[in-house]
Image (cartoon, rainbow, N blue to C red; front, side, top):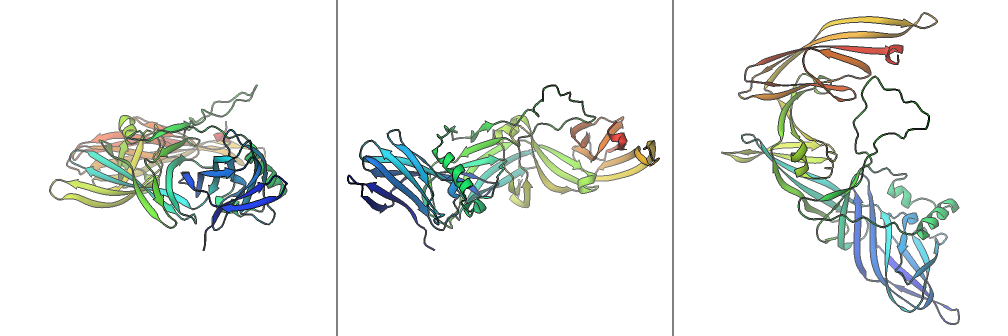
Length: 446
């Protein structure tokens, strides 16, 4: 399939005759801001266009590429002015602009549009030395070009964050251009461009935070907010967006795949924790590496997107030993990073329900049960068989409205999660006892 990307100039002569000149101006520079979670790229081209004095018509057309026609915009230098934007009937892959030049000359214009097919995904390698406790993280980014066109001189910026799309890019490229759609597109095309915020590149400082999360819901005047029975969720970075600018420029032709260095290598000392989460993994311990505070910031000041991790153990006698792969969940900026290394066999766990009763039954007007409380008592026994001291967490995930009481120290982490944290010496056994009170029906809202 032949890919065509042309600019067609219609030049108005002195007697009103219209002469069409078809050419493909040289691309001075191509920049791409590509979003990893969505097949979406904002591509910006800078082209040098020869124009005569007066009004001229520029035509931008494409074939074989998933471009949203309503996203195509042109940015003109100061001497030029945009008269109108035209979407020719029965030509959904064409956008025309009528521009006016005070004098003849060659001008540099900027054309931008949303494009599908240029995607990226992160790949990590973690080398862990169990004797020293140090971990070295290296990150690469894999770029794939399935846009339908070659990109011989490309500057890439990676966007990390939550992308909320009204319509998927490929569906937007195939949308029927109705009068309402064209009216909105013309309004966007003639609106002044928003100044861009640049993000420096280089070294470990790979990104800069552009947008922060909301501090909380807006307060309505006169509204009285009642304190909830359970703590609120901690602030997340659902509205954060970061830009990572890759150094240098690259050639990325259609159907090419390239891997580029992105992070590290960075060596830090994470905390190793054996986590027991009965609701998620049953009565087995999972080996978790945790990076927090300065160690987390050393890896990257911004968020780390989700990706696959190749695990390597650094053995003094055997050297690097592959351990398999793991999945790294999205790690927001400023929050701790966790990596699950798999099941650990150094803990023997037993969890028993030792008591249960129902109280505080509430009836409605028809004498039907409308609410009640249940009380559950648990005993958890954890024994270590490891030759070294271990950090252990017992995590309980409890849905609904509830309360937990225990003589042992615990911390509430999430809306429905508590954790008992302690250490075990070789051969030591830890016994936990706690009571969970659950509120059902009307008892949950009283």
